[in-house]
Length: 189
Ligand SMILES: *[C@@H]1O[C@H](CO)[C@@H](O)[C@H](O)[C@H]1NC(C)=O
Ligand SMILES: *[C@@H]1O[C@H](CO)[C@@H](O)[C@H](O)[C@H]1NC(C)=O
Ligand SMILES: *[C@@H]1O[C@H](CO)[C@@H](O)[C@H](O)[C@H]1NC(C)=O
Ligand SMILES: *[C@@H]1O[C@H](CO)[C@@H](O)[C@H](O)[C@H]1NC(C)=O
Ligand SMILES: *[C@@H]1O[C@H](CO)[C@@H](O)[C@H](O)[C@H]1NC(C)=O
Image 1 (cartoon, helix red, strand yellow):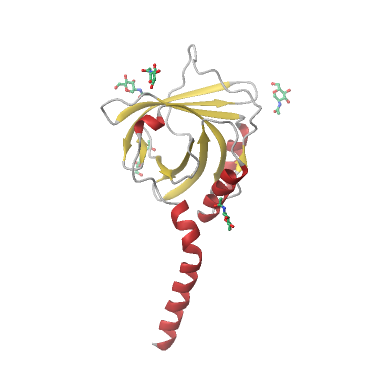
Image 2 (image 1 turned 90 degrees about the horizontal axis):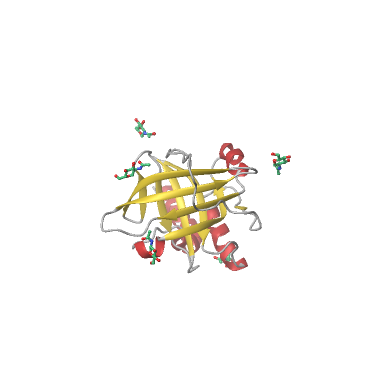
């Protein structure tokens, strides 16, 4: 009985020691401003939970996401543009905005926007059911201030993820308009 109490107390103490730093950083946004989402965002850095996902992540030289202008409905069009060494890949999906993030109409991936102190950033976590996959920071800028990157690194540590990988801001982004041959799939993040 006494031992049980002592252990519980120890646990509570260790939680309260680390909680104040992480609690805010991993908190989902409680309000989504749809107009804030509109337009294009460049991937600045990202991290994965499993090292198995690193290989795919590392083949990308750039990534841009684009939200269509907010309409009345919660369903909007969402584009992803990935730059590889010598090619671009476009993925067009319909998404449903709900709560503090969105879901894809054609995959089980859910995206949640998390707290960030950076005014022109989106910090997003990608989850498959019951499984955290990735954490990304997108911005209107191609690179962040050191303190903003440190905050993102802290967020990844709070979620026990691998070290963030920073994208090379000098790499050319894919052109926004793909002429033809749009690839439609929702599985890859
Ligand atoms: C989206 O909204 C911006 C201004 O907020 C406007 O300049 C742009 O033309 C709109 N795009 C579309 C496709 O409606
Ligand atoms: C990019 O592709 C070219 C040919 O397609 C190849 O020669 C070069 O090594 C590649 N660079 C990288 C960094 O993979
Ligand atoms: C998105 O929704 C529109 C309108 O419902 C539909 O025409 C289009 O095919 C959908 N796109 C995808 C990629 O599912
Ligand atoms: C989503 O999850 C369900 C249940 O696990 C599965 O049956 C379905 O195939 C998944 N859908 C996609 C698009 O992966
Ligand atoms: C990141 O976490 C460290 C402690 O691990 C803290 O000293 C620092 O202030 C934090 N920085 C930001 C920007 O959250």
